Length: 113
Image (cartoon, rainbow, N blue to C red; front, side, top):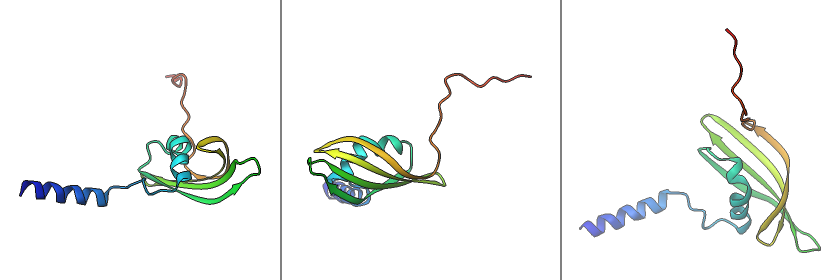
C-alpha cells in the first residue's frame, strides 16, 4: 500500500510541475544562456520563438519573446539573438515593456537630518 501511495504522489507531482524537457532546442538554449538571468526572481516566465532564419554562414537569427510575472507586475521582452550551433553569440533587445531593470547602488544613499 505504501509503494502505491508513493507512486501515485510521484505521478501527481510530475503532472503538476513544469517540465522544460519537451521545449524546442532554441527555447532551452535561450533560457539557459539569456533569459534565466533577465527573469531571475520572477514567479514564472514563458519563451516563444517568433522567427528562426538560417544565415548563409550557418548561424541563425532567432527572434524570441519572453514574458514573465513578478508579484502583480509583468515584463515582456522581444530579443533578436544570433545563435551558432548550441552557443548564443549575441543579442539585441528590440522591445521591452514592464518592469525596469534593477539598479544596484555601489554606496548607500546619503541622508541629512
